[in-house]
Length: 251
Image (cartoon, rainbow, N blue to C red; front, top):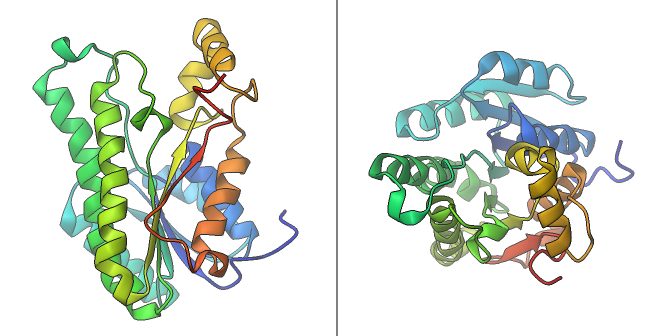
């Protein structure tokens, strides 16, 4: 449990909440007093996460690549919880590793549709709810790969770089609505997409060698940064991408 319930009473929607970092975000936010709207495609997995939360929550199946699905999900959370104070656009995929010259248009388009367009559609669905609060928070999920890509990840790196540009643009568009828009750029964590790297001795050693702190991040460390960004403490921070990567690429 957290020592300080800095999200007491806030309503936070998290996409991709059924597993990995999304699950950790949900658990941490609930510990800090938030009421959480859990969005993902797998309702059974969402309900399993919801059952572990200390505070009220609602599990809603949702496809972030479909505007109507997002609109319906946000409306359901709002109707149940009474408002939406913050949104974490966490859902995303990693395209199969492939050098750019071999990457199929289908794989490229799917990465764009889910990671970049999905984040944009999530932001659009969130806007009317965040604008009416007077203290809205939107957090998008980039990656250290946006600035320091590994071989074979052209589609993933491009979508994450796009998210950082989208973050800055939304911050400009929504400043008059008192919505703070920021992004997190994680390095390698022992959860979600980082699990494949952690489970491979070769890849794990390569990450350790390139990371100043010489380890993978703990999901809780990322969740605590995210909780700051959706709390009242971040009211003068917008349009920024905050890296949390243990010094990856600087070793």
